[in-house]
Length: 243
Image 1 (cartoon, rainbow, N blue to C red):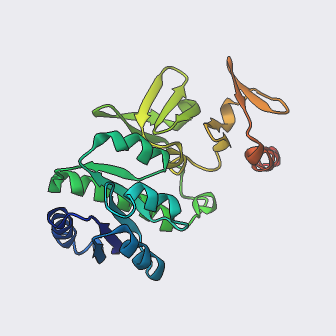
Image 2: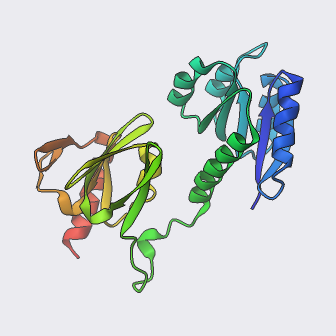
């Protein structure tokens, strides 16, 4: 499956380089338009289904960040810029990745792989809870910890704590810190064993010891239940009590 992308950069050389990179992976990406200004890009985004936006930050008229703030329906956004100080602001706006110029093809490919994984996760039928009885749930996940991949057994996980672009996985024996968003990890965890209770917390059903009105207790940790998650959490507990 190919995904539609748009490039926005006022510098012709940078725009042409990104165009060349996209055209090197024709089985993965389809270039809808390479725009020289955010205003031109806004029109293209309104009239096309775009999956990925490669967006320069410093441009005339309005900046890439300003364009990102006014978009109502956002594709996955990759900021491309020569200035690393925009990384934090970009991540606060939930960009998918950040490419620092000059951009190498190898770095571009790593970003494309990351984007496609996220897009495929969106389009995969949300049928994890509806697996055939004969299909077992996964027993573990691999998470990136620095430069290595760490195997974490699902049965060992007590809860997961998220902080911006990092998650801390609290297990029975250790803590594993990984550079990824809580939402991305949530999509890897079996929905019948784990439940999101707060913007910052996912808990394992088997690890919950006490449920209070506004929090849950797991060992010595007392974790809040967010208002927007209370109904789903109650239904999750009720559903599992009946099994």
